[in-house]
Image (cartoon, rainbow, N blue to C red; front, side):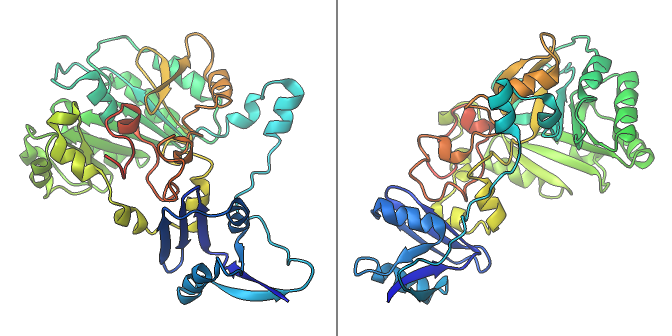
Length: 379
């Protein structure tokens, strides 16, 4: 009789050319080996959830057993059936593409979940264009925006869950967006700088519209004494330096957004943004999150940004313009691109391909696409 070690179903396994990670998604235990060469046949069996018991693997299996990550079984001439441990997507997308050489919008239109609309911005601030992208806010502009045209484009997306309007917007257009959101059961978030926000009006709007959320942007120069509390009122605190964090410690519903212009001017802040491998391993990810990270960029998937000039992008990646073609066709064509940000997961990056922690790391974000840092766990 021969023996194999079988991993429990809740254990996530990632084997690369020279690294091995076994991550228990229930107890959050892990075994992580670097500079560890595995035979290609062993990498294959590990992807199936088992490992042959041999002299050269016995020490490894002993470690798995001591961490209660699986069990040993004996078998005769035939191996027991091992189900594929990866997520499988059962759709007709590929079949449709092979038949027609393109996909119909009926499927791809169901993928869009969140749309950010960059509106006007009358503030002449010191923030650069790149920094505005990090905030998710329009650069200085006073363009006339046809919101009815944008809403007409969004009518084609039945599973749209959230619209974010970022910047300053006229009352009539604001009312139209609120009406559209209510009619289609979509949550609406208004993101605006404090100096262009009326807290009193915001509180009234929140009381009158239960689908409305407001995100007020504050920085080190903001007058925090004017701020108020509401369960759907959030604050985005812009952090230019590590010391800025303490300025906003008394705010409720606050999130911190690092503002990085040049690497050399923000070294301390950048160090705080970089994770250690121990921090990555302590992320307490579940099995579904680990498996999905091998297929999609989970932070970007289903999201787009429509600029005030009608150009469409995703995490800084330009998609096209809805002045040239409708949004459905634009997304439909874009998702076939091998660099589509929705499907550009960490394992596709050259710097992350041989890292077994890639499925536990945060998804690729705007700071990486701008070249601020290489990846979350490397300077």
